[in-house]
Amino acid sequence: MRALVAWADDTSRNLGVRALAHGAAALATRVWPDAEVDFQNFGRGAAPMPVGRLRSLVKERVTSRAGLLAWLSTYDVVLDTRSGDSFADIYGVRRLARMTAFAELAAQAGVPVVLAPQTIGPFGTRAGRALGRRGLRRAALVMSRDHESTAYATRLGRTPDVTTTDVVFALPQPDAPRTRDVVLNVSGLLWQPGPHVDATAYRGVVRGLLDGLAADGRTVTLLAHVLDSPLGDNDVPALREVAAEWPDLEVVVPADLEEVRTVVASAEVVVGSRMHACLNALSVGTPAVPLAYSRKFAPLLADLGWEHTVDLRTHADPVAAVRAAVALDGLDVAAKATRDRAQAMLRPAEDALRGLA
Image (cartoon, rainbow, N blue to C red; front, top):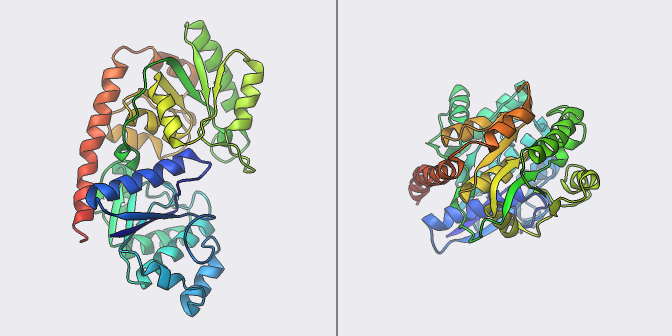
């Protein structure tokens, strides 16, 4: 069995993307223990040509000159992650079109394409909705990772075959003692001006949390979940700015996915602006308080029975809400129950993959 995980890779600077890559691979090997798993993302992978340009993909579909179709035909299945939340047009229609074109090339090569567990939608444009319907219709198997995505896909004309949860819960558990108190993930995506939340307000929330948690007697460790790179949305510059104001704080810039999972496992609680910082925490049994900035957070976490999400877009006082959540009794027990519930929710995804054989 040869499986290709598309739109995630095991060397991305975004550790959420690495979690998707390793999680999808772990899900595949639960079903096919001898599976050989490769990864293909925009700039990295084993493909014989770059796959990040729509024009090149369209040309290859007609000419087959670069050998992409022949390469794809060597796989038994493509697990199409769409980077977790890119089966949508929130990042632009061209990104959606590129990913859709790649999936159609795989299908043309005779390989079943599985929409791996992910957020489906939203599509705010006519072209986005058309591409969404097309991608759902042509997939051999569709998995959503929350009930809202299932409902959204159903409205587009294809009810997902499986409603499951995020593949991060398929990853192995690190063995780490609880040596840290509050681990705070600061997002470079939100620290800079962008379409998700007001950057000035977000900076105010981070500073308010640091002051408020200190007043509550809590010790804070700062954590990057997107590593340093030329891209502007990495977390490291934001952490440096915060650390310059609070020089006594521990700052962790992990080397890889294994290290970040060990760090969150060592915490009493994680407060995360990156969704996979929170999912990594919950998947190892550590309580997490997500600072949500999009639709992908709340439905997934609610399906897991985890009700401690603070939405930066709508909450009147995010700082007070986080401080209250962090102080709740029984968080540790609830987090471990959430982890176990997620394991059970992955089983239908495993069964569906077995049905492809």
